[in-house]
Length: 262
Image (cartoon, rainbow, N blue to C red; front, side, top):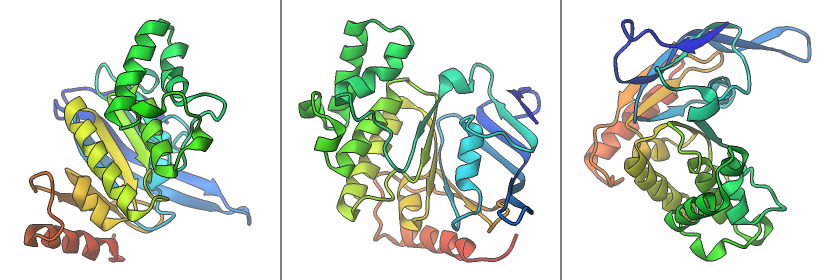
């Protein structure tokens, strides 16, 4: 297992993450090995919004966990561009919010900055701006249990962005939300991404969500996961889900999603 900064002579100059030949297996209840990922290769460029899509159990979350340092791969190589590392460059937003229930929203957003030794005035100023950016400026002193699911996910996004990550990992962050809230947060996230230039890897089961948000969509095979289709989404933003170009891309991804090839 190897994780290191990349040799720029071997990869495109604008890459952020390169995954080469990564495999990961787990032990099943019967004692046999089950592969989640098998010789996975992919490259993500700096500033890209890349969506990973595939059936349940195909290794999407496992890949994010490896990139975020929550798990190690069995084989293969994960490389970050020069100047990027997990400790300082990567933030993770999960499907279910990870806010501290005993801290107000303001103090949740400042937590990472506090751990880094940022002064109180500076971290509060930054957190208040982020809460304003995500539409929660009136809820600085509220606790997570006082808010809706959509508001909690807005706060979790602000919490992640407070670290000014170069790479943002998002594992179905809108999957448990109603359709209207989900669409609002899709627009919010795309706007924040465009302003920040952060590299985003976003997992979803929704083809519609993938086409709305992504620069590229990587379709995973069934377990063990490998990329069987790499779709560039060259559509202007904001995207019209009723346009013929949107429909064409949706159909292309859907055909790959339901394919058993690979």
